Image (cartoon, rainbow, N blue to C red; front, top):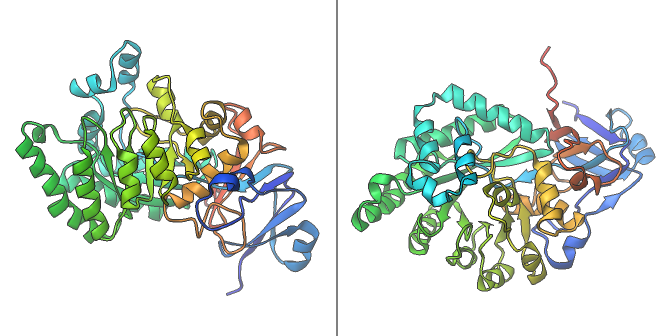
Length: 424
């Protein structure tokens, strides 16, 4: 069968993010590879060429032409931290926080993650799939072509396996690249909080019973633990993630989100793929991340939505030499965000990142946080044709026009995923 080829031509700028197939850090974050007068050739889902347009037309005379209409072409964004599989939102908690209740107080009253767990258990598969697919379509419409989705609203053995099965179904049904993560350690069930013995039994059950079943499914690529005072301790987190690593899963952490507890240091010591949140990271945690291969994934929309008045210390992380990524944290409680464009805006306005740092954090470094830096996150020969097109003339417009929804098209592996082409 003849190879299928497409030429993407007519962009005002092509932001390639081209470079090493790994997380970028330090001075590497200053150049996002912005080029003018070039087009992109795609063959069978892979980038084949990036060259001047006349050369590409000559080299690939039979290729289909995709007219970019003077827009900005970038790699598709890699949203490396979401909890997008859920039923209804928790909008009532938003108002309760405005009235002064803390995250912990809402959880103690039956809200928070436990509220979403009850809803997940009661919601049929078809409803969960339809709701999540609709959310992912909106993310794709903002430039996302790769998305990580965590379990964690199941919590019980059977419901966690169900969650991962649903994530696998989404991965099979959508052109977006979906990376499944097991997060059975998202919260301690209320019944396991009663005594130290029952809590220890729950952690042991995660390791001895749930983890082997998860690995047996062959769906999850990572294990994640909510390492935070009041949730899982450093010792419990280490036990779960070391067991997961021995079983062949990668490790990720919710680390130092609301209170500093040494989560970043633990992530670095484990060689975790990423340490996420980090709004309360310590100086020692910053140094540990900078000296490690662990990606510091920042979630600025979460801190904005929670109204904390603070953000992760992005500049200190970048200047220390840590690899920094950006993600949405799309979830029903603390970041009901489906527009990745706002993440870009917050990165510049609240985290004080440059546009180049923002673009690399949202593409190459997000890919590195998912072990995908060798296949997506940049527009370069041999990489997946994961692309996003924006109604703009300059990449600096993407974070500038707050809430403008500038993305006009996305492609994952060369297949259009926004807008979706109607089936004849």
